[in-house]
Image (cartoon, rainbow, N blue to C red; front, side, top):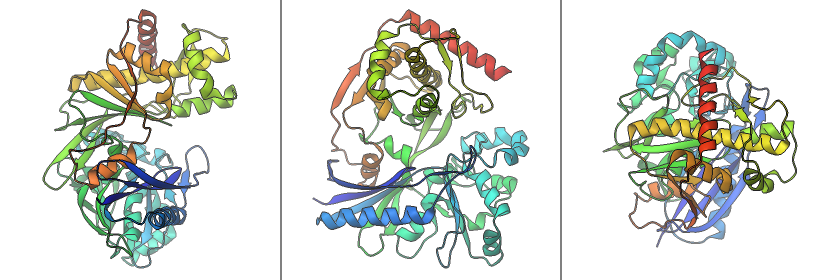
Length: 470
């Protein structure tokens, strides 16, 4: 049986992974990637380092596993953009990270068009997405202006730059899920939006050609391995277990927390959540509704700067048991994500002016649960849910999982296998096989009555509403 190669290019590392035909992990190689924070708004990466890391992990993995590889997949971080020369392939700019917010002020002029932007793209107007950063590149980089003048410019999502160098023939392509995160893509027609290109003054002729996630992308340079799936990291993570059950949403708890629910059609009502492309194959398109909590692991990192704790993760579960009535934490770390989309307020505690370090950390964990619940209530307006599948580092916390079950009234299932992005990408590359290895369940959390938690959640929700109304 032939194996599947997955190249998983993330914010902090590039990985190459081999899977069997039924989703068994065979081997993997990882290389770290630098993230440069110039200030609180400017966040960059080195495109050449990213390419070299991909080449290293792929070559190392294939060299030590002499077996037939039937197909490959590429999954990448979303909303990171750059520019390069189409003749030489040389990067003309740093890769502006998905975390980069340097276009914030520039985008304020488009507030009057926000409803139209959301209707076309399924996204809010935000500097995290590609349009603002592409505008900044066009106006702030002399090399890009020169390439534009001579017709040799290529720009767009990071995935397009990787594909240019990864595939034979140096094509200029992008998949539907990464194109979507540019804020320039019409998710109904699956094409670049002419009205949005005009609105943002982006020359569409220099953007990559959009292509279905599952399609014939070409062959990897120096090999006969066909690339058959390309997508964003969270899109791939949705499919780590194959098809998602009809009554289930997937929650990935990392630096940020993402709640993903596949749907057959876009939601007609405004929910404050993101809409995007889960998978496409040229004949059909499965959409997704996505909720975003910015301050998940990032909130604990913020707290460590205020109240340093050794072996924090090893202590959290005990603290969650021992602290039944923590203060409320208004978690705006990284800005409020969905469904509020507010970024101009600092995090703060209410209830207790002075509290123990343990209670502060429990408050932060509860705030993550509360924000997940706010998003789940919106999801439930679209489709009835009975189950949550949890993954990511913070899902190891029993106290977090139980609180989420209690508050949502949903069965929460945590799996032993933490990996999701690479495995989901492999499933897509293999054509969505029915025979797929399901990860073993680590623990299932059944909802229990928790009146005190419910009351704290109601107070949290009211405080957030008051904050957003100011």
